[in-house]
Image (cartoon, rainbow, N blue to C red; front, top):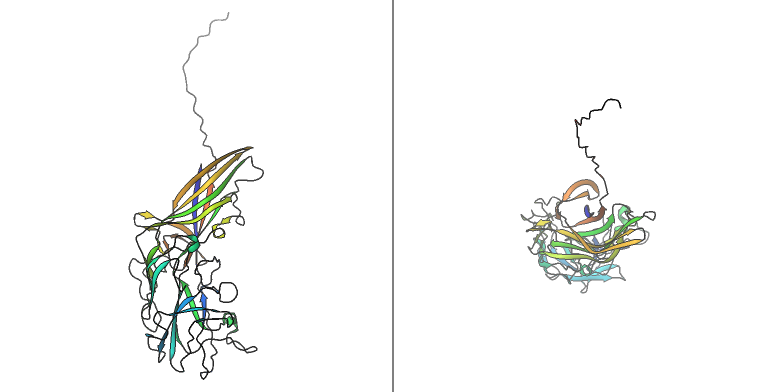
Length: 412
């Protein structure tokens, strides 16, 4: 009588960056080192514990601290290896007066030589856990990472690109001075640019019905109230490797076999990768009471509006002996005329492995979603679909009783 159909759509987070020719301060000046963190911008935002600002100015937070690393080289060809900041990095916070980010200890630019920068956000993984380490040859690693399964304690783990061979902070030209590239003038900041990328996956659910099952004119009406959404058999532990080559190209090395990488097909690519632990856990994505009675997209309920989006471990959706599944618990009310019939705590569990996506990075492309990958955001639509009542009429053939002979008498 009732069934839940799972449909998936995926949108890879668009990369955000800006390139332009910078004006520099006079080398004779003593200039403090400051930063302008720019997270990869997304078309849909939800706030997370530990989320870095998305645009630096304008929409987005400016509260989240990050850890910055700096290395010194005497020329702009040597692979960075000599720490300028302490090896553990320096925690940086926002300076509202100067509109820049800087460590508590003031560091000045050297008069000669070059600095290369790298960063991790947030500066502490709490309430998640793990050990973060930076090595200039290989980049960041996070060992023994455990993601929180509490939707109010999700942490958006970010790592930055290397910013090689800098000599001065970027700065906004004085009033009346032209920008070197007017097209990018909105992205001019008071500090060394840091482009952050997401290390985890993001997953969001919404619930709709495929038709309006409770129209005002109908004698029979169907209404659903979702009380819980759970993701079952998921990994929330693993180890992250930024996987740099350790040379001046800033390139990635080939990912380790069996790892979870950037590529939508999870091919062995040169990229950062995760090695998930074998543990499986349950994410309770949503708990509450939300009526879903219409298929109108504008009225459909999006659970990002009611609870935090989950930020799970990158992983294969068919792993170990189980597949990652979604379990929807709901109440159902059927109204027939003036009579109401209510059924509570119904549930439907469906595997997420192989659900088909219609879009990838904004393009139309049908493919099976078999992995949650680094820096990807997945949108699942859970569709309540009622089976229509249809008929298959058959007419049973007459039973033939033949050759019944009756003699007619002569005329009476």
